[in-house]
Image (cartoon, rainbow, N blue to C red; front, side, top):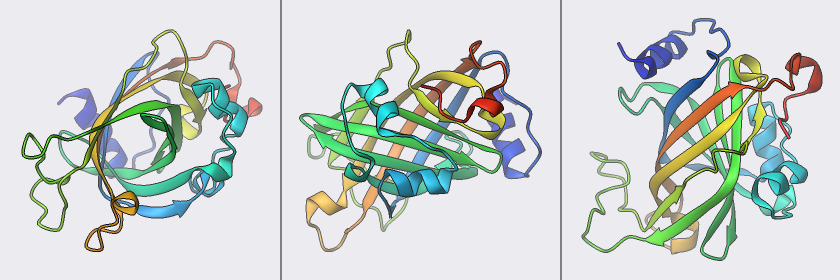
Length: 218
């Protein structure tokens, strides 16, 4: 059984999980129709985090007020088994050619938040544009591709709680979305996401007692 399946099984059956290994690679998928949550403050409330404007600036170089984000919640899955692991929330702020994003990964025993800049590009019609959620007859076809490759020398994890407390790392994303609120399609008013994430974590030696220092990493 591979690491991803072990991780998914442990979360699904509700086992108490220990902290990640000294270095840990987690594969996740945000998949499905998304519900509007509110702004970054609302996402923080659901995730049990406190990501601030300063955290976003540190990760993106952009000064964005928390109320300037629109946040959307969707299922968070193991990409190999499609087991349900928790909830994902993507908080988006449009910029030229892409978005500034804060992405939350919420599990029963802790949360992670990753911040960064993500490129957007249009799908070529009839070239790989299958439904956002394959096999779901209610799913629209994607309009946009999205992706981001992290700078491996920097930390894009802006919050970590529970089993993840005291860890830093990076997040890489590749996916497809249907941006319902921007598409003005009455049949599909909501966002739909199909985004694969690779989260690489490692202990932060500067947080020997992370729980006493709060959950923000920056």
